[in-house]
Amino acid sequence: GLIEGVLTVLDNLTAQDLIVNSSSTFLGEVVFKDKVRFDAPVLFAKDSAGSVIVKKGSAKVTITFDNTYDFVPQVSSTLLAEGTPAQKQAMLAENYTVAVADITEDGFTIMLNKSAAADVRLSWIAIQSQ
Image (cartoon, rainbow, N blue to C red):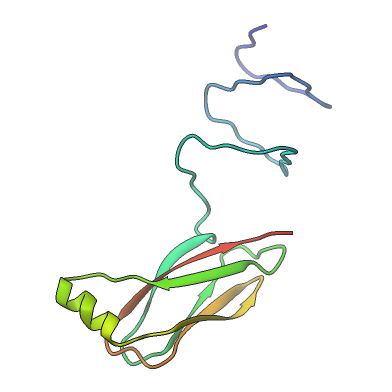
Protein backbone atom coordinates (compact mmCIF):
# COMPACT_ATOMS: atom_id res chain seq x y z
CA GLY A 1 0.00 0.00 0.00
CA LEU A 2 0.88 3.66 -0.19
CA ILE A 3 1.27 5.85 2.89
CA GLU A 4 1.40 9.62 2.53
CA GLY A 5 2.26 11.95 5.39
CA VAL A 6 3.74 10.89 8.73
CA LEU A 7 3.96 7.22 9.71
CA THR A 8 4.62 6.52 13.37
CA VAL A 9 5.68 2.99 14.31
CA LEU A 10 5.98 2.28 18.02
CA ASP A 11 7.68 -1.11 17.71
CA ASN A 12 9.17 -2.92 14.70
CA LEU A 13 8.44 -2.23 11.05
CA THR A 14 9.03 -5.23 8.81
CA ALA A 15 8.93 -4.83 5.05
CA GLN A 16 10.23 -6.97 2.20
CA ASP A 17 11.15 -3.88 0.17
CA LEU A 18 11.00 -0.32 1.49
CA ILE A 19 11.27 2.70 -0.79
CA VAL A 20 11.50 6.20 0.66
CA ASN A 21 11.25 8.97 -1.94
CA SER A 22 12.45 11.94 0.08
CA SER A 23 14.80 12.83 2.92
CA SER A 24 14.81 10.54 5.93
CA THR A 25 16.16 11.10 9.40
CA PHE A 26 16.99 8.31 11.83
CA LEU A 27 17.23 9.46 15.44
CA GLY A 28 18.96 6.34 16.78
CA GLU A 29 21.58 3.87 15.73
CA VAL A 30 20.94 2.13 12.40
CA VAL A 31 22.27 -1.39 11.79
CA PHE A 32 22.53 -2.92 8.32
CA LYS A 33 22.79 -6.73 8.37
CA ASP A 34 23.89 -7.04 4.73
CA LYS A 35 25.80 -5.08 2.10
CA VAL A 36 25.03 -1.40 1.63
CA ARG A 37 25.27 0.22 -1.80
CA PHE A 38 25.29 3.95 -2.50
CA ASP A 39 24.48 5.08 -6.03
CA ALA A 40 25.60 8.66 -5.41
CA PRO A 41 28.50 10.28 -3.54
CA VAL A 42 28.25 9.93 0.23
CA LEU A 43 28.55 12.92 2.55
CA PHE A 44 30.27 12.20 5.87
CA ALA A 45 30.61 14.40 8.95
CA LYS A 46 33.61 16.76 9.00
CA ASP A 47 35.27 14.60 11.68
CA SER A 48 35.64 11.85 9.04
CA ALA A 49 37.86 13.64 6.52
CA GLY A 50 39.47 16.96 5.79
CA SER A 51 42.58 18.86 4.87
CA VAL A 52 45.01 20.82 7.00
CA ILE A 53 48.10 22.92 6.51
CA VAL A 54 51.44 22.37 8.20
CA LYS A 55 52.70 25.95 8.33
CA LYS A 56 56.13 26.92 7.03
CA GLY A 57 58.73 26.23 9.73
CA SER A 58 56.54 23.69 11.56
CA ALA A 59 56.73 19.90 11.32
CA LYS A 60 53.32 18.91 12.66
CA VAL A 61 49.66 19.81 12.99
CA THR A 62 47.07 18.46 15.42
CA ILE A 63 43.47 17.72 14.47
CA THR A 64 40.83 17.68 17.23
CA PHE A 65 37.47 16.12 16.45
CA ASP A 66 34.31 18.09 17.20
CA ASN A 67 32.63 14.85 18.28
CA THR A 68 34.53 12.17 20.17
CA TYR A 69 34.71 8.78 18.45
CA ASP A 70 33.45 5.68 20.32
CA PHE A 71 36.66 3.82 19.42
CA VAL A 72 40.13 4.96 18.34
CA PRO A 73 39.70 5.49 14.57
CA GLN A 74 41.94 4.35 11.76
CA VAL A 75 43.58 7.47 10.31
CA SER A 76 45.58 8.05 7.15
CA SER A 77 47.05 11.19 5.60
CA THR A 78 48.73 12.14 2.37
CA LEU A 79 50.43 15.19 0.88
CA LEU A 80 48.48 17.34 -1.57
CA ALA A 81 50.43 18.79 -4.48
CA GLU A 82 48.93 22.21 -5.19
CA GLY A 83 49.85 25.42 -6.98
CA THR A 84 51.83 25.95 -10.13
CA PRO A 85 53.80 23.09 -11.68
CA ALA A 86 56.98 24.62 -10.22
CA GLN A 87 55.43 24.81 -6.73
CA LYS A 88 54.31 21.18 -6.98
CA GLN A 89 57.79 20.07 -8.03
CA ALA A 90 59.40 22.10 -5.23
CA MET A 91 57.15 20.41 -2.66
CA LEU A 92 57.96 16.96 -4.06
CA ALA A 93 61.69 17.80 -4.10
CA GLU A 94 61.54 18.29 -0.33
CA ASN A 95 61.04 14.50 0.04
CA TYR A 96 58.65 14.83 2.94
CA THR A 97 57.62 11.73 4.82
CA VAL A 98 54.21 11.89 6.49
CA ALA A 99 53.24 10.03 9.65
CA VAL A 100 50.08 9.99 11.75
CA ALA A 101 50.71 9.91 15.50
CA ASP A 102 48.98 10.18 18.85
CA ILE A 103 45.63 8.86 17.57
CA THR A 104 42.89 8.92 20.19
CA GLU A 105 39.09 9.09 20.22
CA ASP A 106 39.51 12.89 20.37
CA GLY A 107 41.95 13.53 17.50
CA PHE A 108 45.43 12.91 16.14
CA THR A 109 48.65 14.58 14.97
CA ILE A 110 50.11 14.58 11.47
CA MET A 111 53.90 14.83 11.42
CA LEU A 112 56.44 15.59 8.70
CA ASN A 113 59.98 14.23 8.86
CA LYS A 114 61.31 17.80 8.87
CA SER A 115 60.12 21.38 9.16
CA ALA A 116 58.07 22.57 6.21
CA ALA A 117 60.01 24.77 3.77
CA ALA A 118 56.67 26.34 2.77
CA ASP A 119 53.08 25.74 3.83
CA VAL A 120 52.25 22.08 3.13
CA ARG A 121 48.64 20.94 2.69
CA LEU A 122 47.68 17.40 3.64
CA SER A 123 44.43 15.51 3.33
CA TRP A 124 43.30 13.03 5.96
CA ILE A 125 40.58 10.48 6.55
CA ALA A 126 39.46 8.89 9.82
CA ILE A 127 37.15 5.90 10.04
CA GLN A 128 35.96 3.95 13.02
CA SER A 129 35.73 0.17 12.92
CA GLN A 130 34.74 -2.39 15.51
